[in-house]
Length: 125
Ligand code: 5GP
Image (cartoon, rainbow, N blue to C red):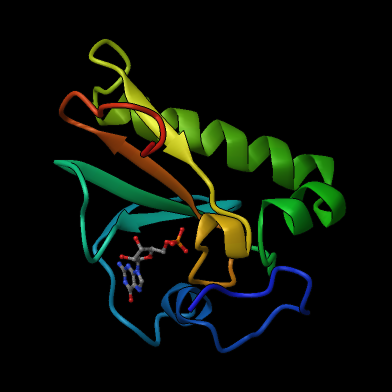
């Protein structure tokens, strides 16, 4: 069931609970602005979710409300994780779903980082 990205942030969403350590995750990276962990249902050999530490529902919410420091910190973290995973030379894909048309399921911004194989066409036709 896709989430409604226009609703206020829900403190009890599953990624908020992972951030607070209330639910387990396979952590990949953490700094002041970002937390990254392996997707529970990987769609590629590398499928990492990168989330901001702050309470943002989606890319829309983050790009509108986050501070320049949070945005810079988060974007730099995503790039760093891809480099740390040796994904730059073979190539990788970033994806952030927002709302119903995209099928966003969790109402805390997450960037999917896919790699480890040829990823195929950008969208199903
Ligand atoms: P969305 O469709 O919202 O862009 O992606 C949500 C992603 O979160 C899915 O790929 C799903 O497998 C992943 N996911 C959902 N619940 C959990 C969880 O509890 N732990 C982890 N590691 N991933 C989750």
